[in-house]
Image (cartoon, rainbow, N blue to C red; front, side):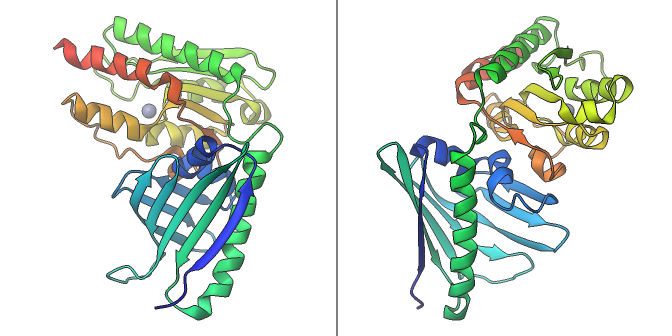
Length: 302
Ligand SMILES: [Zn+2]
């Protein structure tokens, strides 16, 4: 048995914010390997849930499953390098968050397979945790959803409510230009039978027709529910900018199961797994109940 590797860093944010940074794919994309823009992330932070950070260019990645999820204190996971086949897993990582005044002490304990690898791992974790501290301590960015973001997200939820009212599925989206102006908004129109009529796809098409590439890159897409892979791909192809979503595809999957509603025919991949270079912030916990209620309203009708 090797000695586990232990690396700690003080992060200038309370444990709740650090927890969010560790448990959302959108947040991982901002701090894990932000220098590799082709990296895709999947983070399903539930016991038994899968995670993966995969950088296609250099062909490097890690993945595993979450073994412990104790919000907002402790996260345990198995650790495999991409392409590695070992059973049972030889490496485990435990992340502990301890409040220290207004900040958090983040301690990573990595049970390594070989002692020789420990030095490389120490360097790797020091780099990644440094990114985390910079991300959460940065210039008001830090993946935080601002008051202005919330105004647009609330409009998305109102559009989703209108959609249910009209007999459609509750999804609403707003496109906001680089100067903060609302450019376009829409909600789902799938009730007519065309199930590709999602608002995020409509926005991508509208943007391709009406905005220059620079204007598209500077624009932000707000949406009540995280983009599905079809809409994420359209967003990526037309070169739109940041995405802010109120609720995640993983949450939607849970809600549909609870409501006894069928899952969609398309895999609920996170946006960053489809468009690795995009900045995606969400979910926003304070809007979850409202969005869940809209889905409950739709599925309890029939
Ligand atoms: Zn979609």
